[in-house]
Length: 550
Image (tube, rainbow, N blue to C red; front, side):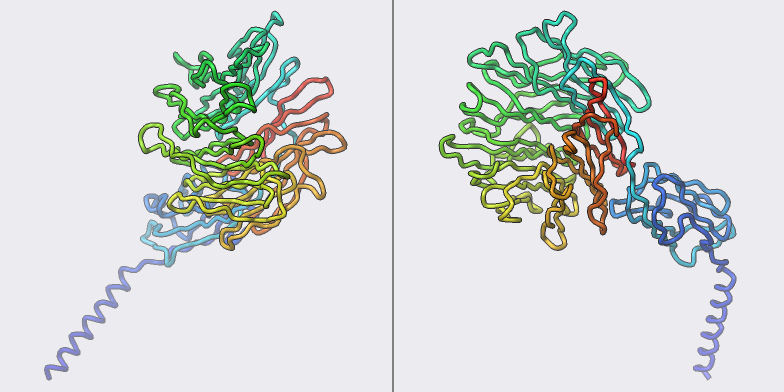
């Protein structure tokens, strides 16, 4: 009898539970329409995305953590709008071109208590970008020379150039800042007498639109010992006191040494690190060294620091690059003996968070043989701080890279038959890399651990200038270079798409150009690319031109 009563009580509890569930559960919330539909390709990078559900939605349930849009590059920022049963997603910045996106919806609720039976997941791929049909002219230079340009991610562009002063007795340096949608007036930022020769003019711009114009002054006739000084003038954005261009100053810090070949990079806070080559006496046949200094927005320029022991001859290019944390890698090569040249490739490292401006001792990466090759090298540093060096000597094309602890590997041979060095290497956080050469581009596949063959820029034609390459966070790339076509230099580009490869080499300059020269190739965070170049026109003037790949 006792066993029968227990069984009846359990049956009663079960029936009550089932009855309770049938009362609490509401109708399911379902997605009945979307734009784009699942697995759509060639989706606009800027259009609003919409999701239509089967019931009116509770607005507070539609949040950035319940409706998300992401690509392999990370989560995409969107603004959300709810209208009855429809959710609209507006990309805050354009979506990356030719990129797979996933739209996820979880935990949204209907006003009648409806809940999603299961999370909603939609997949789509964006369309690729394309070049503007007609490039834009930024400036026309009639009696000016040596123009240089620099552009930041916000579209703030600086153009600097040289021109004779009004008396014809010396050179002036002028610069103009172009804001998106506005036209600015040129400003004279420095003036020098006839016996001071301006060379190596350059301009650099940070994320906020502040900038440095830099140049070298050589005395003419040449004094002995010669003293070529590195100058800089800073532009501060804003309209209050201290904004605009400041006063030009010497930054190399020595009265009897010469500075040349300056490189400058900004961190995200607008501080800068500069690297240059220095010699004491008579140019190539005197001991040379590598020097660096830092600019901070709070204290200005610091004292220069030597990265080597000032007893060798600098050979080939030098470079400096920063990661997202502001940590820096510097690289250079030296010759110990001009009569028996054996180049040695070095690096040094600076950690921004370590306190003070302290670099690691120079580290030897490779000893090169360069009887039939230049031994030039290219440095790449990705956002998270990994570094890679690539170079070619008589024994072939090689590279070295850092491991997770920052230690450099031994040189790794890519191709013993290649003795041409790359002009640029780009390294992504996922380990993928692109190396641009005058005859083509190589790609490193981290999953396979090997470099691809050299895909040509143009069949059987080398570039007329060092190619530049940019790569978005999804691994799509674009290479640009100057190419001689029937005796006229043109600006060419070629596209690389993930899972499709390289295609579409074509000029992007004006069809009426009488000669062009690539100045810069810049990747915006949205995946759009900006190219700037100089172009000769039929009036005999020089135009500064630009175009967008978007």
